[in-house]
Length: 264
Image (tube, rainbow, N blue to C red; front, side, top):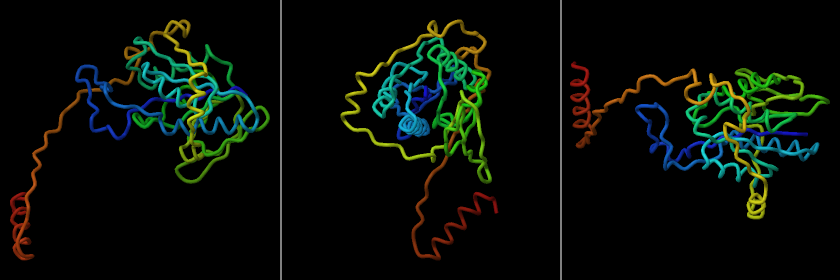
């Protein structure tokens, strides 16, 4: 089975406090912020590995981002993927979910055929969960999101999808785009030998020119219908007052502070 896994490089949550927004482009300034492999995408790759172990095949990982995203692709190769593609071009920068899904669809088209495309249900930074269904529509594939289990069934798949209240069972035909819930499995650990082997696996970079003829209406920042509006800074005048004394004295101080704040 030919499986593709779309992954994303996202800012390390430990450094969220250091992230700033460009006042002109309204985009995140990611310079100097360490990145990690999006957690939900790890579970998608783990599911791909389990399918491969069960029925055979090979796994290709694809991501769109700056050259630094090779680090996350190498991690995916160490986990067990067979090859990787980085889609990277300044022309593609600033893309929203629609432009991102369009670009990924072009990358998957030029590197396919695939029987199954897996990805995490959402990314840790955007958390829109738009890309999986958009990608399925661009490719004309069956697609299903928030999936908790996948079972191959003849020429398709039986999936269990998590709903707000309960679960739903679907049978979808291949090729398909399936977005997995992060609770679908437990991600395996990699070892030093796997990391060394990953360096010898193919990792290619695709530019915008490698994706064939692109529809400029859906490329990069200019082709993104979702644009950030005005950014406002919230001024804070918070301060701290230490309350001391006996319980009665403390209660009196609290009453005085609240009365002043509420103009009692």
